[in-house]
Length: 348
Image (cartoon, rainbow, N blue to C red):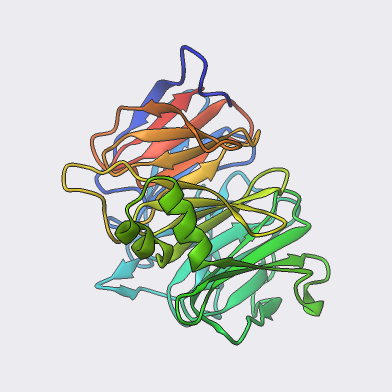
């Protein structure tokens, strides 16, 4: 998607919500979008071809008992994976659920984590998926099989905090990131999805000093660059070619990292709202499927569209009234979705 040319994206439809969206996920067909909002424990479904509510699925599902924080579309058009929400800082459950949205029925519960699940990644080629939790574990599962996880990955001894784990676009590789003890940066390890038991085939280190240097060179003050260089990573995504890895982090920061060397290529910072930039909330960020652009949600309700190669701002979109906390791009059509309390579907 080239956001530098006119006339630019136009807002196609808006789906109203009552609480900020925490997660967006397109189905691989591009026909519909799943929207999770943790505060009110609601999963919404958007018809992306006609706009508004779908005719073959309920427009909204209330998940009061489990809560919902993160949602991921599966290969089945009527089923999703989701992780539970948090109640007073404590996760309602530590499971991943496989939900049929057609009849609001939980088909399977995947138990094994002992704390909040902060990432779910569906394989693009089969029914396996990864989950990562604040208990410091990464697990591999199969949607079609109940019971224990297929594997629990061993992380390096010198790591701390919550890891992240995601598949690349081919499903042949997955990456795992974890913070280095002492706040000195992050490990990114790459695994062969067909032979993960032998350990990672590539081990990269993104140092705190490299992050701080990139931020200072991009115009951040020394104090802000130092603080953000220690920010917790909250999301990870490969681009289609695997040449870049996009990291979202607390403090309204994102980084693009070389997928082979681990060097920091570009940094992206949120546009502050009326109350200033958030010191704790993560930046919502994603690649476009053609690898040309990076989409970032801002605290002031705008959406920044950057050129992935240069890191330069190509366009800023306006239309939201509050912080944009979730973004996603259609895998099939020239369309993307951004969300604050309401979800906007843009025609690109």
